[in-house]
Image 1 (tube, rainbow, N blue to C red):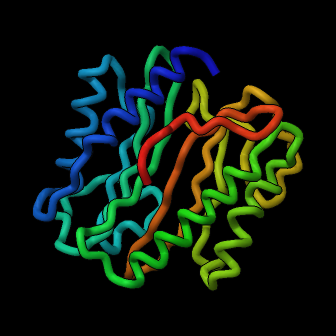
Image 2 (spheres, one colour; image 1 turned 120 degrees about the vertical axis):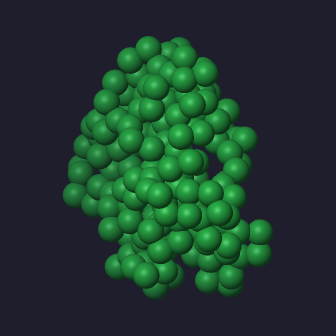
Length: 214
């Protein structure tokens, strides 16, 4: 972790803090707005911006299309800043003003799963233990089959670096590493919810870097 990566984090947080996703505009319009703001901050996209609405939010890497955001739809936004050679990575899922019971329930499951995953991060802990903390909670709520990727990954000069927070990775986390914690539920034909934050591993736990409301 260095000051340039911290700046990359702050840029992404600033952009997402003021982001709106309005019914009637296209996913690409939202993505272009994000990328324009990155340029204003002297940064570039850390990766191809993901904006996926409605049923498309069930695609973990749902890159922005010309699809219009519909009333009542979930919108998943995954973006990051590339600043002076280092990257940030954040996902937020936006619910409509009047979410359905199912939308609220799945969002709450992911929010709690992520909280448990973040709580498990600490130097000396195996990467698979962080994955298990999030995954087992989602499984206990009946959605285990719909969590179809790893819980997180390292971020630095590349967007995906070691350590991978996966079910089989026995790598022990080290103080100073920066990792994401990003559980998700993806239901084909309905949509998906993912929340992703970056944390700095410490000897006693971790420090949340992407301090952005969920």
